[in-house]
Image (cartoon, rainbow, N blue to C red):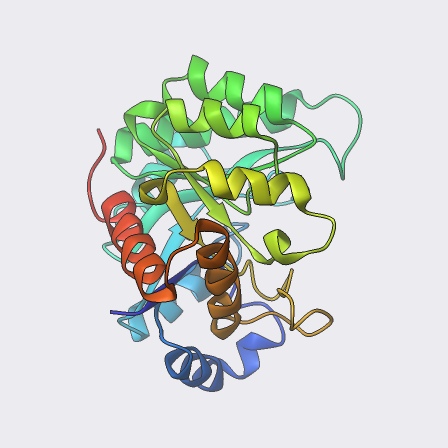
Length: 257
C-alpha cells in the first residue's frame, strides 16, 4: 500500500475534468488512496459519486467555515449524510478569521454543529483553522471532540497549538506548506510531532509543494511533501509512507466514539 493523500478536492478545476489522469499520475507516484473533502453540501453529490465510482477514493461531508450563502446544515442532516459507507469524516469544518471579519458567531455555531454530528455519527472531524487557533481549540475541547477524533488539516500553526491538538488525541496533517522557505516554525513542529500522529496531504488544487510551486496541485505531488517530511524526521520515505498510511486508516476506518 502506498501513500495516502489525506485531503484533496478532486471535484475542483482543473482536476475535475481530468480525473482519470489525476488518478493515473497518483498511482505512478505511489499514491494508493485519496480523501476527497467536501466544502459545501451543494457539491456533496458530486464528491460522493467520485468516491462511489473509485474504490481508492473516500469522501467527507461538511461545510467549510469560509463558505457563506450556502445551505446551512443541521446536525441531523450531517448525521444522515454521513451514514453512507464511502463517507469517512465530517468536514472540512472549523474557524477562519483570516478571510472574513466581523461577528463570527455564525461560524462558531456551524463548527459546533459539525462537532456534534461527528460525535453522533462516530466519524472523525477534518479541522480547518486560520487566524483562529485559540477559539478553534477551545471549542474542540469544550464540545468534547476527543470523543470522535480529528485531524488538523493543512497544519500551519505553532508548537503550542500542535501540543493542544495532540493532547486531545488528534492527528496533524502536513501539506506542501512545510516545504516553503517561509515555513521554518512549521518544520520544527513536524520534527517534534510523533510519527504515529502524522498525515500528509496536498489540499489540491492548492499549495503545491516545492519543487512544483506555481503549478496546480494534484495528489501525485503528495510524494514530494512526504519525502520532505521523511527527511525532517531523518527516516526513509518507505518508513514514513507505511506509518502515515497506517495512521490514516486508524483515524478514518476506526470508530472513535
